[in-house]
Structure formats: structure tokens, C-alpha cells
Length: 357
Image 1 (cartoon, rainbow, N blue to C red):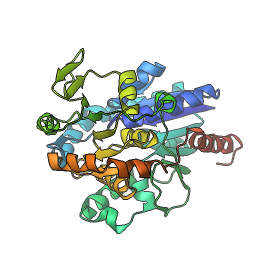
Image 2 (image 1 turned 120 degrees about the horizontal axis):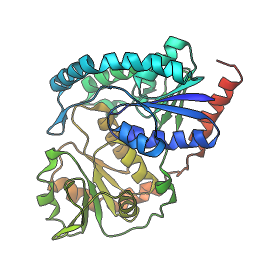
Image 3 (image 1 turned 180 degrees about the vertical axis):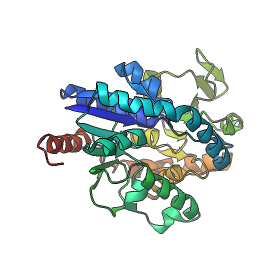
Image 4 (image 1 turned 30 degrees about the vertical axis):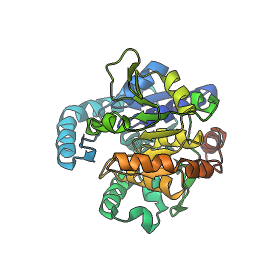
């Protein structure tokens, strides 16, 4: 079948997940054309070549908090420049590719394409869990306004799909039809990694909001491997107990697999990889971004780690003391490869091919 695959460009997790799915679809003999925006474009283009680059919404973060005003302003400016090209691309894709089915990873352009041409549509992402599941009060406490805003946005992005596959390591009650919770889609390097317990903490932070983090880390009596804070590095730099590392996918996965614990944002991809590798996780969710708040709170509820929007030395030291408890809880997590999730997608495509939509 000819499959049109849309990937939202805000954050790299969508692109990383979609690359795994696209490769699976190609291996199954399907023809796939990707449509992407933002950072997803470069990542997917390096892996698969030709794709359609479109303009997409983005988010402005200042001091580890969503700046709603600037987010609105920047997206309005981007829309003025980007939407005419998106309309042109709409007709070019139809003329050149003429797909049979559409898959969307929280991407609206391909959702519109499916609706305009009456094509079967399946959404494969982690974000829809906000709208399509019921969340306990403890997950929402103090963040109800953020939840309502996020829910309305998620609901509006890709409504009325034929099916929703939601990747997750936590399982709230599903409240909507045509919705299935499935294990996270993991990169092959993560699936091949052999987890073991080392002595170091792995820290991944790219936000300038955490400029004081190195001084806190120097107070610890454990080695710390830091990625992201020194993106200019070409080789490792030692500063006391801290080793700053240039980014390398292979090196990062090796350091993750051998870490004693992880300190990073509350984005879904690294968190789900860490849970799969049984690594305790200290999450620093962006204030006002409910998806990250939710991820961190479910992580904490399951006993896999901690979540704190205001990272300080006291919090890190508490995290270190609790590592044995987190490790014990993570040992009970049911690790999966991608077969269950990709199998569910294959079943949907089989029904499409059988004319059931």
C-alpha cells in the first residue's frame, strides 16, 4: 500500500518513533512518503531521503516554562509565511503520491489530507492519552487548567480518526472508542542495549534554564555524565566529578544502559527508554506543559522515579537516596520489544486492504 506518514516537528521524540515505524512499513513492502515539520525534517531526511517539508506549530519555552504569549506570536508569524506553502504541498502530494491510507504522529496536515480525500486514518502517538483516557485526581491536582488547555488542543489536532494507537508505559482507563494503549516504540539501539548498573548519573538537559545545574552536580559524591549543556564540545571535558560529553547516539545509549540513574526533562521518549532499561529517572517537566507534567506524575506514581519542576540539590540528593526503591519497582516492569505495537498497526492496515474502512 501507499502510506502517507505525518510527523509533528515539535521535539524529536515523534521523529525518533516515526523512523522506527516507517522502517517497519518499508520492510513490509509498503511505499511510504513522509510529511514533517521542524526538527523532524532533518532527522527523517537523513534516514529515508525524499520527504515533504511543511510549516508546523511550535512552542516557546523560557525559564523552563511555556511562554504562551510568545508561542502564539511566533506561531502566528510562522503561519503567515508557512501556510501558503502548506496548501501548495497539499495538492502536489495528492498528484505525485496519491496514498491509500494516512498515519499521523500528532500531525495535522496529514489529518486534513485524510479528511479531504476520504482516506483511512490511524493516529500513532503518545499525546492522545491526554484526551482519550481518564486520569486520576492525583495526576491533575494543581495542573487542572493546564490539563483542560492541553486536552482541548489535543482533541482539536487529529479528531475522528479511524483508530488511535497510544504508546505508553502507564495505563489509565481508556474512555473513548477506537483507542488502544500499546507499549512504547523503541529504537533498535535501545532494544539491543544490555542494561547494567554503573556508578554514574546520566544528565541530559539542553535548556538554558538549568545554567546552575553544574554547580549542584559538583556537590554530589558520584560521577556524572552530562549531555546537552555543552553542545559546542567535540570531545569529552572533565570538570571534577562531571564529564561533559559531545553528543553521540551510540555513546549516549551505552551511558544510558550503564547509568545508575537519569536526570532529564519529562519528555516521553527518553523517559520510556529509561523505564525499559530499568533506570530510575528524575524528571524536570516544563511548567505549563501538561504532557510533561503528566509523564512525570505517572512515573512517580509507579515508583520509577521522581518529578520536580524546580530542580535543586536537595531534590537530587533525595533522588539518590531513593534509588534502591526505584530499582526494585522497575524490576517489575514488563519489558516489550516493538512487536505488539507494530503488530496492532499491521492489523489496521490489513483491515484497510480488505476494504473495511
